[in-house]
Length: 281
Image 1 (cartoon, helix red, strand yellow):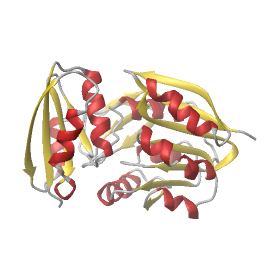
Image 2 (image 1 turned 60 degrees about the horizontal axis):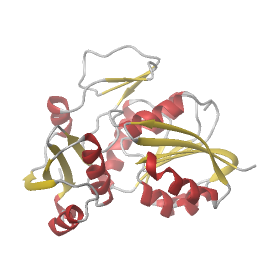
Image 3 (image 1 turned 60 degrees about the vertical axis):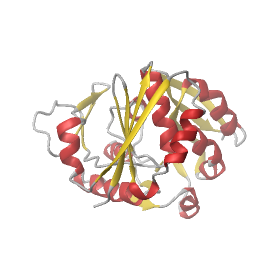
């Protein structure tokens, strides 16, 4: 089991927008899980990836006015499913059609699609606005027989749902080894037909063009890797993107437009955005 650093950032004043922004910036630095509350944010990163200087620099340049108090401690490797069960992860129903829960839950609401996610330290349980929005997009699409690529698959929740809705083949790609292992486990738990590949955007070179391309990561990675994404999307295919704020949509839209991929729909929740785009025929 991997040891982690538990980073605690208290902010005054604190708001949901502030903790969401902190989580987005920390995700860029390799942090994997985030627990916001009324006074700040608790974030987790592998001990080998922890850099206190980068945290200090992030807070010094933070775009919102606040006073920060930072503490950290080592968290020895443990049963993360048990930690999520005790503290964070509760069953959730999305769009009245999809229930997401863990294997340790017993009181589970009934829904058309039942997804089992044991999150460990990987991101994506449906509780965050970006995952919720992406699930809602997939529920509204006809995926029967469509090929899907899920870039930065995390817990594989989106890849699993795509498989449940008839997509085939489904490929998920995850750069972090621990998250990749978690994604493989979750695919197995759901008996989903999805291949999970460990790697970054360069792994797309060996994958056939898809009807649907998904990336719920963050603005900088999405815009930087757009050439790879565009090359793996069929003409007429759909691209679903999230992991950024509503105010970031023009930046992401411009990056996609350079490859003939046009914005068709945006969905917003708590300032977070998920957009649907289509590649020109």
